Length: 419
Image: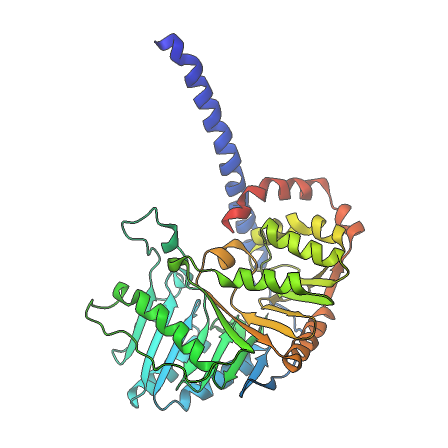
């Protein structure tokens, strides 16, 4: 029996070693790169970058204001909180315990103590490094800390592993803010991001987005008898502004479909800005087809993001895109964290979803889709401002990169489905 089993045992040992190499080597390399990059960044500050002042367009019976500088956004968010009369809904992925985070916390506490209902949601995993003291709130504020591990005993259920990556503020069902900005001092002045302020009928859709997440997860934080957050039915539907929500618990991922449909309909130009760009092959194919039918496709990314491994994995798609005529712009000297696109002078989106697996097929996300020419013109002007602060990557430069860079991209490629 031992003789017959020996070849099988050797085969299993070989398979284990191969599997360890395929999985373990990329992970080890990714960890090493992250540690080295963190060491190199110590003490370095981003340089100033151009921004556009807040710009408002009338869309669908309300207003939409676009922010590209964090301090401008925070000032208006804090003013809205200070003026709240009935209810505040705040949902954020990262909430730093620094001076900006403290300002938001103090404003919410003040609102609650003057009788405003205050609900807050934050992602526990994203805030592991934040002081526990900061995460202690007075009882007047209802806080849902979305847990680090949310699958419970159902560890096999992939629907329960999504992070809450949304960033939403709704005040009195009258004004809402949504976009890429987290809450923290660095985001106020050092990162280039995009957020929108919405008034009018579409505010209700963001209120519902918050309420549905709260009601779906409230038992993770509160007693089973905790009453759900109830809403009145919307009286107006505005077709020019649509709120798309990824809900992994329900296996709903409409944001990816929204992007693919818009790209496939494009006839003139597609201008995209993304912090992390790790698309699946269907997404790449859609952009390639657009470029080959004559559409001006431009993708603007950070030259160096805050996640070095994501940067390297993203580069694995550059050859396909550049060969098809897609233009790749790399934002210089600061982190661009925006998640925006504008197409054909009429279609735009701003939201929380990156073009990667985690955002498009994993996390809780929210994007605003806007079909309006004036709003698209605003988004195009912002893109051109960012492009002016970017370096374009050309095919010849890309193909001339060193052999060790190509090897690193090859080794990290197995991690693509995870990010």
